Length: 209
Image 1 (cartoon, rainbow, N blue to C red):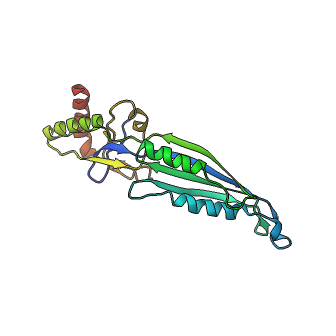
Image 2: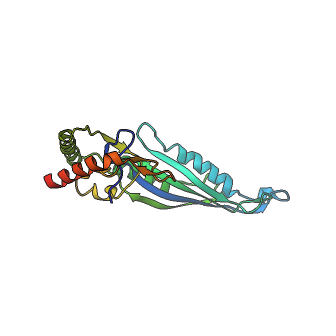
Image 3: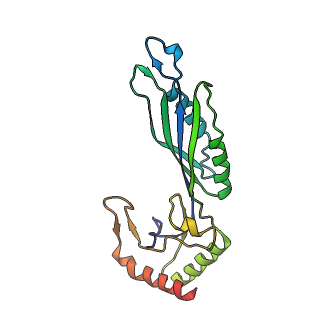
């Protein structure tokens, strides 16, 4: 099953970000929020402090992003929370970036010493880096596309695919599939006019390798 081309110019993909999924869990000390708040150590407050630290690890210029997409914790509004957690999505352009951010996440320490921070998870898809071998494949495809009467661009994307797993071991060209719109949406669709030329390009690429 081929990954779709990259909109808006239906490019082949020569680079993909790596993906990590982490869970940051904080344990604190519960207490009655009205009767004896001084005896409590809030896990939700400590989690908020940790999320600010995590946000500082993002670097949009370098293409590194960390997103606390799901968070939870506590039991009732009048109880200082003993537990809190967040699920973190990490996107990194290079293996080295992934290793560095992974170390920083695992080194997180609680500001409130009565709380404890535990980080689990890790990188589950390595980056598909733009290697010299992949560039050679793209240039070959571009030449073949020109012979079929259309231009072919290359693109990088933040999403992952099985290409992330093959790229560290062999030149990998991705996004050689259908042209369309609405990926993963209810209106996802393929543009029929592009099926024949894209299939012909794929066949010529296979034959030339």
